[in-house]
Image (cartoon, rainbow, N blue to C red; front, side):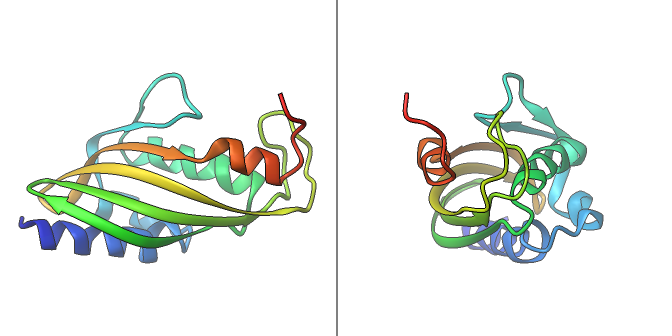
Length: 139
């Protein structure tokens, strides 16, 4: 696939899958062999179920979380993306009880795609900003 086609897959992945919480689409966008590196997990998560696990953890704390895809740069099978994340803290998150506060934070990720599916993601949301905005005490 071309770099432009990979960018289109990422747009659809964001709009149709992660922002709708439609778990039935996981296998359409995520390779069974995919590897996800997330700061919230010491070990990589794998395949569609691993990505659903990551989304489930976020949605348990922020049921209304949404990602706005702000920009992408693509080359070959890789896409770099910058997102704005927004949500409301309605469930426990890393030991912090629900505060009802909203957050807006930047998240960046590098994706590798093959045959129209994500096979790897290295994501880095601005966790410090999220924690501060939902009321975590400074360290």
